[in-house]
Image (cartoon, rainbow, N blue to C red):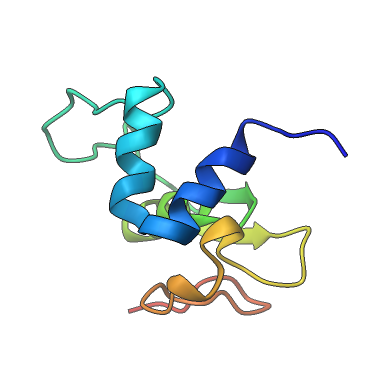
Length: 105
């Protein structure tokens, strides 16, 4: 069995928690802070446009949420049987998509 670069980070996360894993990722250059400080701005009007988000991990759910809040009709597809990607059961506060996409607020 070959070891991937995720394996040592997963071991750090299991042993010491997410804060230690994030610190290890930042030290290894896998996590850099963004210098963007403004609100998310989507250019143009949705005008009934539909967007398909592939992958229902945290990034996909965040993108779908921001697009939906901007007025786009969002559909999401996930290859795996569970949503939230590698975060899995830790993502309980995120709206769960239905067959019709994310629920509207």
